[in-house]
Amino acid sequence: MAVVSSLYRYPVKGLSALALPQVALAASAPFPFDRVFGLARPGTIFDRTDPQWAKKGLFVMLMLDEALARITTELDVATRRMTVSKDGRHVAHADLDDEAGRAELENLIWTLLPALPAPPTLLASRAGHFMDKPDNVISLINLATVRSLEERWGYPINPLRFRANIYIDGIAPWEEFDWVGSDIAIGGVTFTVDRKNGRCGATNVNPETAVRDLNIPQALRTDFGHKDLGVYLIARNAGSLAAGDAVSPPQSHHTSAENGRSADVMPNSFMCRGCFYIYEETKGAPQHGIPPGTAFTSIAENWRCPDCDTDKAAFRPYTETKPA
Ligand code: FE
Image (cartoon, helix red, strand yellow):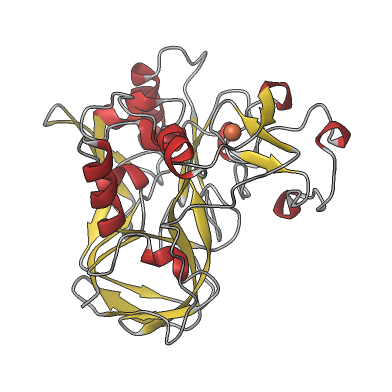
């Protein structure tokens, strides 16, 4: 039987996971208190009183700043007090509503990231979040898929690399991809499985050692012709879910015998060298304002990868060779 293995929130973008025994969700809302704080890179412009969602390149984040994984943070979302530990020792206890507390945290992050010209700025979203994607999606990882990759590739893969909200077990590897476009029930909540989750270089960072020791997007791209792992959900009703709750797959769904493999040939495609995102001219990037059918050469030269913010100039033509 499929069940929820664990639930996590990440109160500060790029910082520690906090396990939750249960959570109450609202319809179409994000996972509560997930990425409600972010650390803006020095020099970025935000309205500090009401900062709005922005793409990840404007924040300190694991994809670029793997040293963030060297500290462990615990945030009490009710009191907004954060405890920071490093090498098993408490190094700070800061009140995020207090100017001095925020400055203490910002300076501590700067000591981890000395290449920054100044401390980052801690921002608190008033009503939204600083997740990688602007819409209110909740991320799900199937542990069986992660185990199948460990067996296939021959090395351990800590599932927390994928920084999901909901981890489930008890279904077949890749079965979650067959659910896209359908509804599932978890505990007291029905979710629409909205889309697959294209992974970025944040997954390359080992959450236990803060070392960038794998290349997950590249390994997926090489082996399966895509860089997707896990899916994004949208909550359809208010309700609670808890670790141990049953997961009810869609009543009927199409099945993919391809184990998550994507189409074989993609003409007129261009791949980001930073994160292996592929721009397909036929599909465009409608979520980012580029209509289907837009030639790559017609996209503005200051356009950047929607997944990792790499320059357009760093894309190269991509022709997929069908995996063996
Ligand atoms: Fe990219």
